[in-house]
Length: 604
Ligand code: ADP
Image (cartoon, rainbow, N blue to C red; front, side, top):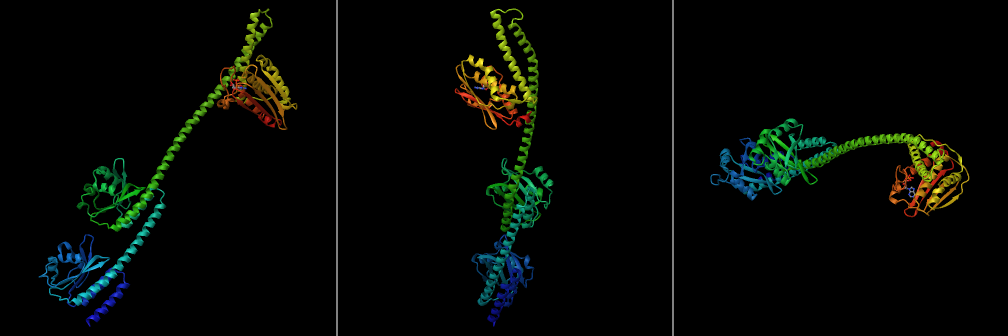
């Protein structure tokens, strides 16, 4: 009968605990079943293991005291120690003979005989079941003990299921939270957003809003208060002020933070005052009792810490809680290093931009100043050449009067002197005229006077003017002119250009050298080429040839303005001038003028 009842109970229990995921419920069913099974058992209690290794009353049956107040400490109870060590149930028939149980419990509950069974899940004892009498022996039979063990084993399976269920739920919740944290961090644009998200999720994970972040300064090996959650007891100003007033977290003096930096792992402290590592003075200032310190690491470097503190009473942060907090800190660290980098970059770009703007402004001022100087120089040149032209013309006239003998016949040496003066004056006048042209052209006060002209006749005129000089150097002059059709040009100015090219060819070609001048035309252009077998222009200097006042060497008389003026004049005609030159071999200048001179007209 007993066996049948037991079987029915076991069957009912199996059904019930397999459909229930509430641990309290399962344990209550277990405790009740045992109570029903053992007629002589006055008291049945389940004690659940606590973090410190003690066992606290959880559910009971017929107990005279609140079971939740009962704590069994294995240190003080040899009987419990033996059960734990052997992981097996034990029975004491008479506590007067077997004195292993904690005497205070024996006295409190008038225990005479006691049966203790471990509740084991995944090879770990998670709780203990005690069955005992109240002042009289139980006389348990081995059959009864076997049945009770079957009950406990059955319940263990159910508890294991509950654990697994809870664990799965917890992991799911944790995953959800981490996913949400990651999303929030990804949406965070500023450092403050990242911090807020971190504070929010750490607070939620631990059910504690007292969260702050300290930043590690590698240069002086200290941690500085960075930001604190709004949900904290302190305002950020107050928090920082208290730090400033008397707390300096340096690795040298603070073993807790030193450990954090050394091992880069979360540290949980249940009671700061029974732990030598934390700075007790700081704990007093902030009224801290327990704490969880989690490292912030990004790109392989620890750069700060998340601190969660509990005020007033102690609190133990479980491994699971600290792991979750570490995961949130890891996500925070990456996001934080990114926003800090971006903000730094932003600041750097802003700084560089302002530097550039500054430099630009300075440069603009320089350019303005240079323009101004250039204008002043232009004005100076133009007025100077004006001023010079009149007296030079007067001198030239005077020389002519002497040369022609209007003031009496000159002696041979006198005439020679006058001729020399005449050549020098002419050259001077040419140079002054060149200067004046140049300043007119560059000031934009220059106009071409165009009329239909035969280019070959302009070239021939230039050659005639230059012939004495060419002959003087014994140079061979070749001419091949074939442009008869007139085009519209400013004759004087074109003559000036060809003269300049011929004069350069003459100047820069040694005695007995050759000068060739060619003209030809097609439908759209007229070309004039002046080639010489002279000294040529060094390759590295060629790009400066058209620059005003530029001379390769100052050995030959000139102003360095001729080619610059020539280029301007040709461009005013809508044409272009170019050259090829080989040092020691010769130079060829090419002038190309448009037949259709509308381009020239517009420039007028
Ligand atoms: P300059 O009045 O000094 O002749 P230009 O502007 O006419 O000034 O010429 C500039 C410089 O170009 C000359 O000083 C000379 O060094 C070089 N140059 C011009 N034409 C020739 C050439 N045909 N052969 C060699 N060098 C030349």
